[in-house]
Length: 249
Image 1 (tube, one colour):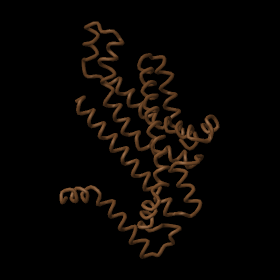
Image 2 (spheres, rainbow, N blue to C red; image 1 turned 60 degrees about the horizontal axis):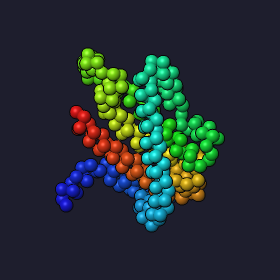
Image 3 (cartoon, rainbow, N blue to C red; image 1 turned 60 degrees about the vertical axis):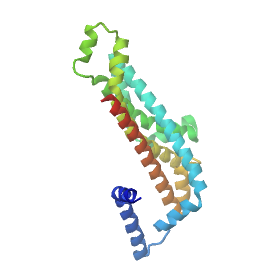
Image 4 (cartoon, rainbow, N blue to C red; image 1 turned 90 degrees about the horizontal axis):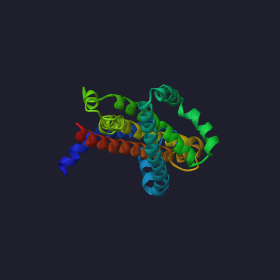
């Protein structure tokens, strides 16, 4: 028990310090709770109304996870197509870079017109956000081969398909896992942004609804839940990356 407590304090003392400073600041200054609520009020709302956070949070998490998987798959597919042909590489790489540089907020109204103002648009936004890291890192991994390995495969007369399956694709796996780790937290954030702008449910919508009704404690509680979900997603992705890299290296 003592060891667990020491580990918790050593890792999360910064979070505890922020909460203590927050509580002390709002108490001393007497700032209106509509502007900044007490941490205790935020925690009380989360504890007393778990169903509100659970239902909306589960939807956001589901859309973020599904969009992450689809976006990673699409980015990997496009990267493989670009690797397979110089012509496709010249076409797909610039398009991918230009498309990914467009701010997500600017894409939401356009995509909403195409898919409707519902969860399909939220899912499409997450797919787009997850696409870029997968495309960039997978493309780099497909071209980063162990020294001399490609020449060795060619000397033994390996076909292009054999080189891809046995050499190129395995070499890209570590990079793919890095992309997965980097894309996991933004997937949750992008889902929330889409829900905030045009959703009718989810954490983003809950935050907008709470803020418009001056329920500041619930708005802060939504932010806390979203942060926890993002941290969990990052931790799971990091653990998966370490497990894969341990096998590949």
